Image 1 (spheres, rainbow, N blue to C red):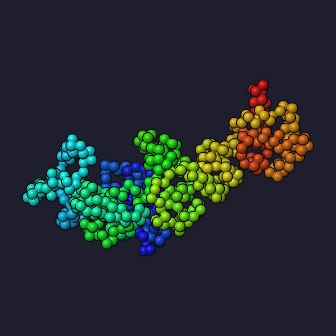
Image 2: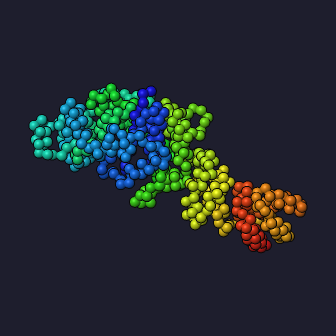
Image 3: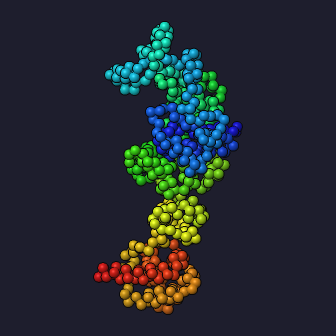
Length: 514
Ligand code: GLU
């Protein structure tokens, strides 16, 4: 395959939805698979929808995921500028060329006139008013008006838009890499505005001109753009650029966790799941979201999960680092049907990546969270903690939720095992055990274990009589990593204090029952 030049072309209208991130990922993967170029282009021609901070968010999200553009605003490249607002002066000539070749026309209709036409259509039962060849003749444009009138209007500086003149009775055939042949009947298409009254191009014109000038080879984007592709093909044809027209690949929808309907940004807050890569602080709570990162997903796991939303390698292998995805990826292996956003699967991926991460990496990832809770910890301690806990967490905050007792001695004791196992007549045994542990030197897991086991055996107790008590005194819970290693890490002094405090608390728990 020739080296692909692909672009991720988001509009900075707010936080980048996870569907957009997947589009970026697939573009990136195709570029890297064939030693091509991944371009970031900011499509900001619609000033009314522009949201400050959105471009920065997009760049930060790509950076977090490791999807570095080869060309783009702030990334260099020879096809710039890469922000459409900075290319404003470039598009008019192509709109003019289309007018000159009778492929587009001036439309002088005011917003009020357009509203009136829409109303009129509604009254006659047509709720989907389209500015197309059937109404073109009744509107005020350079097709319907006499030439002198058009000239007069233009000379007088009358505001106008430029519309694409869709041919009648044509079938437009698109070869989509994912969907195969897709056909559009031209009579169903509207005469889209390509240049607005303020001189700015609309998405359609800017997108085509830029894809052409930036020598884009493949357009990989969401399914929602498929209907626009008919217009785009006509634009390529009308500008005599059909020979170099990019190939199209329209990605399947991402479906809600239930599998029914498209995943929306509202599903995030409603279901308590991330649908954005990073958190976003909007003006209202409904427009504010917690990201994959802030939920405690690792970027590698997020990438792996997203890659599988629509694509699969055709083998059993599920764990793919970005580099491995770059080698295995192909557009042909993307499915047509919607991909269900399965948050449990995302957590499973995260768990796998956490297990594979080194203790040193994990320690640095969770350090801010531990410090935020008010605990300063030594690096060696934190790393050992990560080693003990990493098989028991899905998300990074689970390290705290399931292991807070490594940092805090304010424990919440699970009452059930205590009610069952704490017997006042065994108090002397547990006091003696505590005293035996106090003299241990070095205070290490193997010693701790043999001390407990011999005390147990000498008194005819089993593991089930002793370990739950010790465990709950040390950590508050019967769940957790190896109890002897946990005790070693916490240290002799701390264990003495916890046993003392625990025994007293157990007496109270027991007393409360009687
Ligand atoms: N600006 C469009 C968007 O926001 C780009 C669509 C395309 O890739 O052509 O998704």
